[in-house]
Length: 430
Image 1 (cartoon, rainbow, N blue to C red):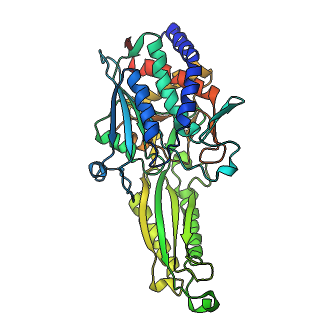
Image 2 (cartoon, helix red, strand yellow):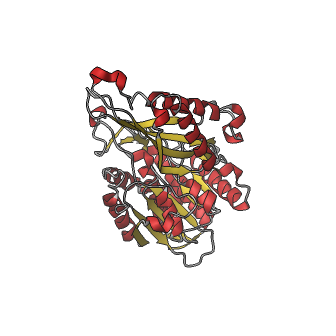
Image 3 (cartoon, one colour):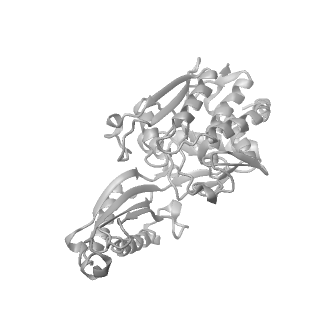
């Protein structure tokens, strides 16, 4: 790419950055937790429409995706799960096509009194924007959009088809990204600006969600010895699952990308419910678990071991051995994905183009990193033969209190993304 074009694109990002920050603030103000994403998606659809993109807004139909690889089971209705895609159709199609993917759904804020300021009233202080979802990953949605705006400000457009995706369900299933694939949105590469501090993600873990349902024998607490406490019965099962977690993290089980990490796989008991009355021995309990798996680790085999571990531990309980737990899978059935294992020429070219764009923007080489989370990259890399580059701004306290994103980091990511688009897709007159 010519140096004068690089300069023009970076200058265009700078010129539009106040508008970009205002856009991010307005988008973050939408409380787009699961099932409540519609207003944020309306906002995204309007932003794409006024820019002249062909906007596709549709409700996800589980029946259309439930038999596809990568589908995650769901417990509730999908009447409110809406995706938005804005398509740029190139006039020349001389370059390589691209998906710019990001998710608009955010995790719950938790107790509001534990935030320094309301989570959906974003504020800017000391170069950071605070608010739930500002980092994970609405800043990425903004950087994708304003990188395209920078090209337009220079009188240019990508010389290949580009699909801007604002999807739901990333935080619980990934079915939003899968629905985009099912709808026919494919490309030569995908860029996903998740907030991993301007590093390129070389590998990500898979994730399995499941619930464990336990039954007890209720009685008045005065006669507790004749009952069976369904809450306390969960404790040895959870301990057994943590022992399994320890085994899975053993050095001999780690693939190369994670060989240096002692504890990459984390098991989390994220929710616990049980009992009906303080003075009654609880008759039931349910706990929700998230367990990670390595790239290449079989979901089928992992589930089989999870089930065996739970049932073996239950059989050690005098009551549970005759009332075995029920295991219910819902949410993530996500395989791990390693971009580092993609030896295709397409992947090498995409990584090289991003590396060059990053160095041109920051003056530093692009750092590679294996992460201990999952992203929607797996759908493109595993099921669409498409290298998926995860590269986004620096953020802190994602999923926590006082989530925040570094605005100067978002500026750099936007510049690098604009340069990457110009290199990867080529340019044509707007």
